[in-house]
Amino acid sequence: MSKHYSIFLEKAAEALDIPPSKYKQAVARYEAVGAWLESGEYNGQIEGMCIYPQGSFRLGTVIRPYKDHKDQDYDIDLVCEFGAVVASSNAEETKHLVGNRLKEHERYRQMLDKEGKRCWTLNYAEQDGVGFHMDVLPSLLVPTGASQTTISITNKLDDRYEWCSSDPKGYAEWFKYRNRVAFERDALRQKRSISLNFQDAYASIEDVPDLLVRTPLQRAIQILKRHRDVRFSDRSDWKCAPISMIITTIAAHLYRNESDVFQALHNIILSLDAHVPLLHGREVSANFSSQKIIRRLPDGTWYIGNPVNPDENFADRWHEDGNARAKAFFQWVEILKEDFVSAATSGDAVFKKKMEGLFDIAIANKYLLNSTPKVVPPPVRNVSISAGPKPWRNG
Image 1 (cartoon, rainbow, N blue to C red):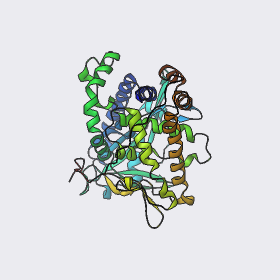
Image 2: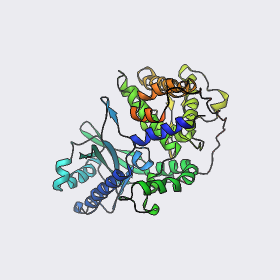
Image 3: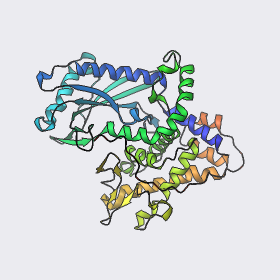
Image 4: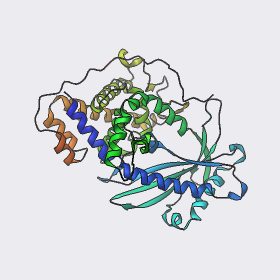
């Protein structure tokens, strides 16, 4: 009964995604930036370097940002990882080693934005209506007992610099593990379709990279991020909008290998809704209490842990300003429930009206009818999550 909704959501997310041809262009650009950075001498201060994507581009959850009521340029995040010991390196010096090397390139110097808090940003001009911002994050490899891929990243605070810990490679491996069943189910079919529709970019199925495959989990995350961008665009508390890392982490925890986008999104939203009592100091219902994905601690603070670094709390600021970010998150969950769950049970006319405010109207007109029988939502399975194997860990 929800199949046509799922088809619409798939097409809506696809329209927000980076097209395969533009993906290939973005890869060529970041590889060129990487080659330039890797060929620098750096006065012998650094030994070894590698460049790799991180964030939504690597996770397959990239969308065009939405701001001021229009789509913006794609953000491509890169890590510039030096193989050096953090104790012997200075965060400010490391940051400017990368910035100065980019300034040595005539074209990159013209494209370079002013220094950011953590990154150097290259602004690529639009082609065919699509532009890119490429954020280059300077870092140092600092393996730990828990992970061999931990890095220290530069962070600028006013006029001083510091190191912060991160592990984008480890997080990507965790996400890949959560997504593995759906990926194996969907990869061949999608690669065949991409090769057929983008023959100029990918001549064969083997040429299509894994990072272009999109499972219902990845599509659901794209839809959640778009919904957040649109619904918070005119709100006075827009700075409290849920960060993408929280959305991605929670959705990956809650995904149960559903085979279509609507079912995945529906179940994620209802699972999030079950956590609303936390805001009022009450316990989560028994059906969801074992998940412990969002936790309210005895002192009133909040905890959403990084799955590859439990010491990192993505919700470390939720208690500030009278729980402003927590309130904004759960208000957003209520709007999600109204826009997707409640609207779906009210029939196509209501659902279509909601979707027209979020996505391309032409896609809604093409894939959604004005009147059909009400949809019976798929049941939510009660799942108890146990601590399973963690192959993304590096001992």
